[in-house]
Length: 277
Image (cartoon, rainbow, N blue to C red; front, side, top):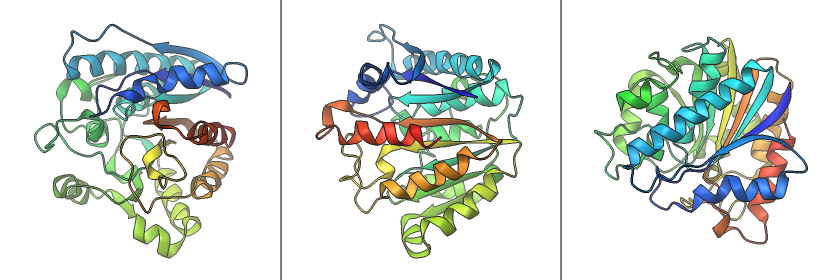
């Protein structure tokens, strides 16, 4: 399968919207190295956040499905993490694997709020819940009316900043969360071995990486920086393992804000992540 990059040029799901420029910035640096399908841009200023995000996610869903249907491997570059609604709706529906698709989610946050529980109302804090069928009905129905991810096939790695309401939802549904303290104590090899075993119980699986999963000195170009994060090798090694798996069908990298980068450190990290698969 050939890697094909697609961009989610939207920051409307976040409090700071500079990540909307992430895909275009990365394409300008990588056009000669990778194949790109598209970056979807709309004049979304008159639209409310929910409508804009819905439009962007529906397009990303179509583009992700298009790559899958052409026997390709989608690599989605964002943009805020609401993009996951589009990426994984497209991948799962194209594979006819809604509810039977595993997802390994590297993130400092749980992203498992619904509009009713979120204090900020920021949609980049809701994609995990949305993909499981909880939250805004319009966003839950992108691609199909089915829940895209089953809790039993989902795990979150690196969580260290979250609210009780989203933790309660994940606990109720039985989602496996590897908190950062557990990752540091057990080591990424042992934790990831357990995580990929969970994801591989499904027919296919993918990986979503929020750049704030990393420690700020590793990936400074993201708005929701959280200390005590993962190091680069903590995700490089898992991606190399995933690349050998036939069930591995897509990669997503979210929350890249090029305006916050330092000496191109985060941009280079994204290149290195993509080259591992």
